[in-house]
Amino acid sequence: MENVKTLGEFIIDKQQDFPGSSGEFSKLLSAIRLASKIVSNQVNKAGLLSHIVGAAGSDNIQGEAQQKLDVYANNQFIKALTARKVVCGIASEENDEFIPVDNDGSYIVAMDPLDGSSNIDVNVSIGTIFSVYKRLSPVGTPVTEADFLQKGTAQLAAGYVIYGSSTMLVYTTGNGVNGFTFDPGIGVFVLSHPNMSFPSRGKIYSMNEGNFYRSSKGVQEYIRYAQTIDEATNRPYTGRYIGSLVADFHRNIIKGGIYMYPATDAAPNGKLRLMYECNPLAFLAEQAGGKASDGIKRIMEIIPTELHQRAPYFVGNTDMVDTLEAFIASKG
Ligand code: AHG
Ligand code: MN
Ligand code: MN
Image 1 (spheres, rainbow, N blue to C red):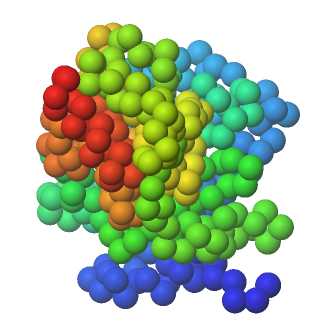
Image 2: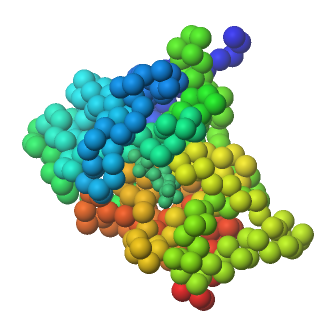
């Protein structure tokens, strides 16, 4: 194992990027690293564990059936983030209200603890998404909802964990995107994908095309465009849709592509959640030379008015998102 850089070492090296934080921010990332390992370990043997597979018998605030692994992952991340005393509050897709943690903490975390729930029981890649902000209210006071309702541009860090053919943790602190692969033999994440960026040309489009006729004319036209044969522009594109946003995004950042979850007539604001899914991956996308849009404007400029707010979502190679926006601008 020559020249191996572990995530732990990387976090310490980068601590100088946050001179004011006296290591607090590093502790936060370490908490995420620990919870990821615990969840990864359970995911890898999920088929053997009856307390991990299947429905939990409860719904989240969106009325979606919670899976046992949703609840398990949520608890593990909350536990790890609470133990380090640097976080003042956590907002999770799985909790109706934000969770106040420690009045003396400086940071707030928004997370989707388990992304791709429908893929848990069928052994397909799933993930965790997280987003970190500095609180707005003074340290030492109780965290407030306003601390959470910040624009995506205010994110200090964002990332995801993908539990796939291997487990990877990919994150940014606004200074590029780095990916670490978990080596279960030694129990550490190792820097495997330094300075990740979208390839200059994308060729993949990812959408649940069952929603085609429920989408706007502009989105329909873009799908037709993606399917049209035109060698000069590398079309037709390749259709790939896993149904776990993290996995679709991860593939597209490596191979080049666009992920789309548009507004539909059944879900006028789209399905994905601004704070837990759209903003963190938008931050990563922009840091990797890509773009994230709601079809009209930059995702990270949206001012959230509620924790569980949704947004139509288009993320990936900049040129592909630009073209999609042009179709929406002309066709709606
Ligand atoms: P979650 O499992 O956190 O609820 O997220 C599921 C999301 C996203 O990961 C995925 O891309 C999308 O929902 C799939 O939705 P459809 O089944 O409607 O395609
Ligand atoms: Mn999700
Ligand atoms: Mn989820």
